[in-house]
Image (cartoon, rainbow, N blue to C red):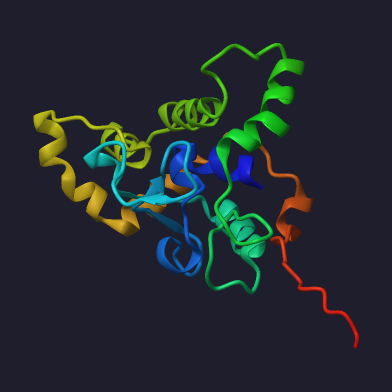
Length: 194
């Protein structure tokens, strides 16, 4: 599910692991509010992002939003992706235990690839769509100080327009039907009978 989320949002891995359900996820999961990231090499939140333009609202395709909503299930707080004890995922552990072996098996294990493959994929999907460059830069958190971007800022503030554009852009892949039934990790405390 973590890889799926990174594919459909194009978020940086440090941003994705720091998403908190009650603070950063719209109730229907159509928008993720990027406002914080994980501190590098530490298990804590950093309230400032890589760049000023990193503070953004990432619109999610309706089909992907339904899958994220189903994954969240009945949770209403905590990190979207968290360990059994409720802490943020550590990207280094994900890379070591899962992503690096997958990429090596694919012959793509070169240094520096890792989680950027998801951002690159999403950017290419958006570039191939009819979405305007200003929206692509906004969703991806790129900084671009051109005059056209300043004049076109009203487009990124128009949520209805953004939602239409993310639908048109699509996901870039077909969704397997079983993803729609995916539920989030439910942490159940074991109690010993006295």
